Image: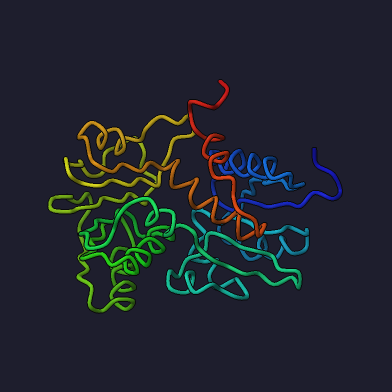
Length: 270
C-alpha cells in the first residue's frame, strides 16, 4: 500500500512497459520491510533532464536509467562514481539529501560477476550505453581482445575503448558479425527473436536481452542447444545489476534470491 511516507524509486526509459524491474525491486523492498515502491517512468528523448530533476522535486530516492538514456545521463548527474566515469554510462541514480544526483553504473558488474572474463577474446554486440559500460568492465577484468559489432556507433565505441586501454586489441566488425574464434559472446542489443551470432560449443554466452514471459531469446536457446559451458541470460543479468542498484539506494544488502525468484518464469503466476 502506498502512503504519504512511501519512498519512490523510478525506472526512466523509452520504452518501459515491458520491464520486469518493478516486479523484482518491489519484491525486494517487501522482503526487507521497506516502505518503498518502484515505478516505471516513460521518458522520451529530449525530456531526460526534466525527468532527472523531477526526481528531486518529487522526493524520489533514486532511479534506474535504461534505453535510450544511459549515455546522456552522464552529463546530467552532479557527481559520478569512478565506474560511471570510466564507463561513460549511467544506469543508476541516487538522489542525495541535498538534492544532488549521484550517478553510477551496475551493468558491467552484472556481467563480469557472472562469467569468467580474464584472458578471453570477447565479441560485443551493440554499442549503446550498456555496451559501453560492459566494454569498460571487460577492460578492467583483463580480457585479451575486444571485437565490437553494431548497426551504429561501432567506430565511436571502439575509439572510446582504445582511449581507455591503448594496449588492448580492439576490432571493429560489420553487421551481422562472425563469432569465430571468440571465447565470449555478449549481446547488448535489444535483439531477442533473431540469432545475431551462432554460438559454438566451448564459447561462453551472455545475453542482456530478455523476454517478459521468461522464454529464452534466440541466442540463449542456441547457446543451450550447442551446450556452451557458461550461458547467462538476460534475467540473470537483470537480477545482478538490480541487486547492486538496490544497495546503492537503500544502503542494505539486497535479497538477491527473492529478486531472482520474483522474475523467474517458474515462480510467476500465470
